[in-house]
Image 1: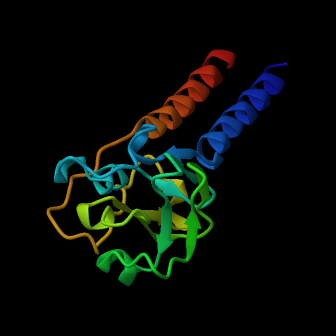
Image 2: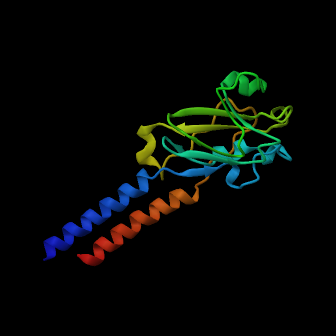
Image 3: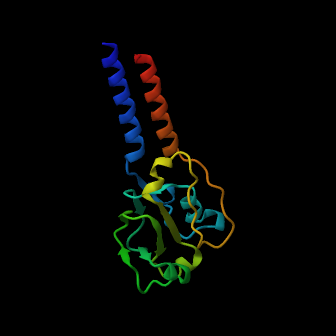
Length: 178
């Protein structure tokens, strides 16, 4: 009976660890529904939010905005830097946009409303490579090198704390059942 309990415990711990590292997440741009707008100041830039957030392959970005007044354009790096809205990779106009992050590396998004990008309504999202998934709770978030301005120190987010909590809970349950 003791070996069965240990096997069950070990399986439970492995399952909890697997879930904490494998779940894809939906990231609401800016962490709130009204974030897709011209920032009121440099400190309100969406890139500050993106630098503090870990993005994994399989995660999705979600935008909430008034589709009659704005849009989201996925663009190449050069178009991001120059705010060129004439040749986007993808255009999203419905106001309830969801974009799946299917590869590692940078993704560039700008506002399609005339003049908004030039006023700072844009964001770079850097998706970590698959090899970094096992270090989700340890390594700092990569910051986009293309962004002008001072670097912001990375901070932990609630998703990492959730994963650590699940691992600790699994270990505790394992010890209690031994």
